[in-house]
Length: 459
Image (cartoon, rainbow, N blue to C red; front, side):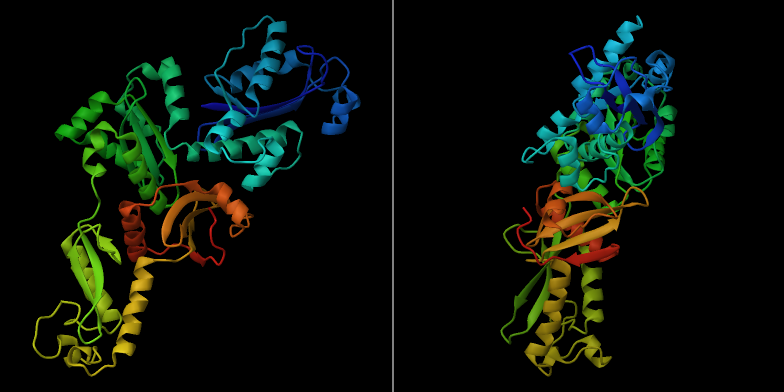
């Protein structure tokens, strides 16, 4: 649990500043579950430059509560939390000083979004909150007011959690939190999970990730893990003490995250999924008469694949469908062995390429259309799909036929703006498995929208 906050002060000498405004959002890693904001009477004058910066003046604070009057609420909303702020060292020092004056020891672990941003997005020009959120396309209102800045920090922190592929943020907190070291009941882990699409992580007592999975319903999938009685499930049930998760909204992004993070983290119980996801591929070649032929072959990294398949039956079923939908020839595609015409020709669903009746140019045009649709080779495009809530969309970036990464954006973003697109995309490696996941998904599902890009070299 996180307490994301922002504090405005009077300015002045070090350790003599007073709080003029405070805003705190209690954040569970996915959504805000509680919030508090208030002006505060600092019982001292505000420096003129601060008045110009924030718009808060002495008259506004005359009837505001003093710090001791809101101290209990601050303790309640930050209980069992890690304090998160933009320049957390400053905000934590101010709070600690105020509580010291009341004789109360205020001691929380802290995370600084400035430091996290520098680590996870190292090439940005500026890490001030105003310039950072502008670069990332995060909306911000009431700049230099506690509530506006704290709300923007929530959005920034949510983005940083998504970019943290190594899960360093979550792992460090699990190790620091002694309450998570107690072996919980499996039913408690299930109850704490959402019935939503995303990726989940099972941890040992020391925080080590032992299993990564994805599901369209995380709660239901965990129930299956913790009620199965096979050997692997029983071992997981004994080892797991904590489950964390990330909602993705999009099932495609859940699959891509699961694949990459298993490779990166190498969890103990994901050994099978570290292997290649597919065994067959669809290839094309030109025969001696000039016709383009499609064929199913064993997966081979040395040969360029149009698309890939988990097993042979899946590949054969898809090729039959492609052949029928595009009036192609079963004989040329290796689906009908004959010396004469193919079966579809007798049904008038093949134009006679099998017996050289159809011109090669007309036939090959349809085959090339299939290749372009299924391979996305040399294409620049965005795959837009559902996000984690109604106001959000997910995006997968394909550049020059290569998967570049994924991200999330609010509906007010200019998603085709290269600077904004670059800032929200979490860079990911392009490999045979990611291509297989994307191609397979596009064969079986429809995304909300596909946007063709004209601008090259987003990265």
